[in-house]
Image (cartoon, rainbow, N blue to C red; front, side, top):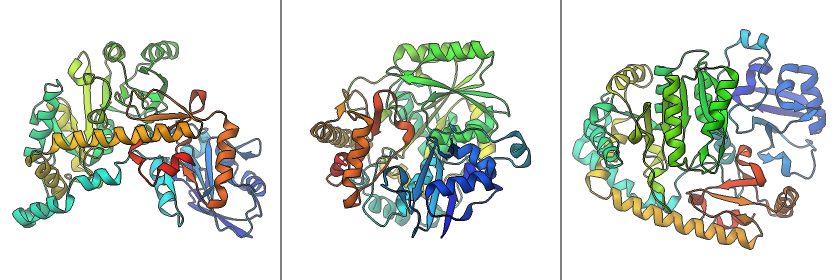
Length: 470
């Protein structure tokens, strides 16, 4: 029986660069044995004691193998092997393989989106921080796009300025000043989403061998970006106050390293949902300054706080060199891919030159749709509606989880954490629902101490209320 194994991008170098490999096997144990015999380097990354290790996710014809009653592959067509969403928890490739081929790290999150998209049956995904359908409908995108095209015609479809539309840069700078950041349009670059802004920061600041201090667990896409630029990543635990700055300092001293960059998501950290406390913010800036390092502040969720008091951005506190990154993806339309970076004008100039080799400029039509929305004066009211919408969703999720016997933490943050009574309970709970073809797809790295799993309230509507129950 021939089964095709599809490998995630980070694993392909260990299999001779192959994207897919065919095996004549009848079950998972036999597949593991074949991989060990034919591809020992791949086996070193995906197998532990002869079976698929906890650092990989295995999907059989799109279904998570952990939740299948049997490992039989007869009648199956495809097995997908993906690293768990830790951004690099798997074992490194042997030195010989690294010399033979330059490894390129990809997005495990985006690959999960692809898995969900290929499902032919009902799937509820808790894996991605995406606006809910109701939030997208609130925007009135059809009228915004039609207005821009009717008024501006073909000019809205041409090439734009690399740094971004001047009026939109003014809007972004004004919003930053409202939060206490000393910014003007000359210190703003409009990027193709926050991820491009992160990549631009890597291009400007990082060289091969530089050390980036990041949260653990962390935003996997950012970790991949750092590694693609040859950086070494020092992951530091996150607790109830965000990045453990004292632990970061201890590890830096112990290893005798000099970090070039600190990367944090200070508000509602991805994926834990924790917020960096005010004291930790000051301590982080002091630590970075002591090493002459830049702090990259990725802050996509700050506007969506619906409980508690706002904390000042790192860029408002000063004390170290700071690059502040944001996006319209969480509060407006993610498909437009419009984000921004705020930094010193010399840094913006360097980022602009780097961006010219990537895409020349962020899409003109997308920028002008965002700008039209803000010109109409409804942006603040829209944020208010989103906060209320997500507050209601979180309340509903908490009630659903409690009815199902889960532990629910006090919702001080935008994200909600659910704790199953035991690991066995969670697995049997899913197994009990298998006959009705219900599945869960979520980042395994979200599971932390006390067996907490993260769920994003943006997903909880009438349909996904049942997803919480599953």
